[in-house]
Amino acid sequence: MVQKVMVITGASSGIGAATARAAVKDGYRVVLAARTPEKLTSLQHELGGPDHALALTCDMQNFEQQLKMVEDTLTHFGQIDAVFANAGRGGSPGGFSSADHEAWRDMILTNVYGVGLTLQATLPALRKSRGHVLLTGSAAGRATIPGSMYSATKWAVTAIGYGVREELRGSGVRVTLIEPGMVDTAFFDQKPEHALVDEDIARAVMYAVSQPAHVDVNEVLIRPTPKVE
Image 1: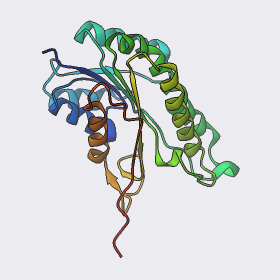
Image 2 (image 1 turned 180 degrees about the vertical axis):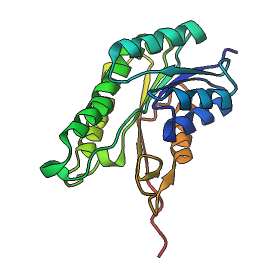
Image 3 (image 1 turned 30 degrees about the vertical axis):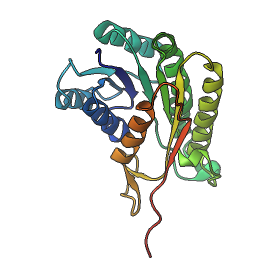
Image 4 (image 1 turned 60 degrees about the vertical axis):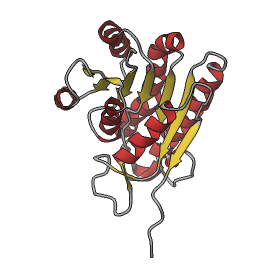
């Protein structure tokens, strides 16, 4: 039986890297895509080398690079069965009144535009394999957070997930929004006191892709258990 192939963006650390480890453990071959080649190479080696993991440097804001990511994946592994559009960036403090607007630009282009580009680049292969689209949304994309442009980008990802699911209805391609609450990753400057860990989110991804073809897990919202007083 040919092993399935999962493309993971933002794979160099945090949720992306944890998902790559979980996917390889479950028998997947993985494509590790991110901006940081050194971290990708190290993770590729950890996961067993190019027979199991392909490391590709890719800026998710660049459509040509995303198309090359897909081309290289198909050349190396021959198929794409799942895409985890996980690449994302945080914002800047200060709310809408005084945040760094240039930081907004990079975040919006990565968190929203980059996700759209990932879909456009990978959907032809996913239609062929009747594969699975997974998007890293957020609990912040389901709530009103004062002054948060980051939250606005995750609301956009929620809308993208709903929209692409309807576009793909009847194609056999499944779509899952993975919506973490607070996760203890390098995303935060200071370690959160009460948070999930990246492996918790990886397990949610693998739960969604492990379901039989007639089961479409639309959304997985994962929050830390409330702190015991």
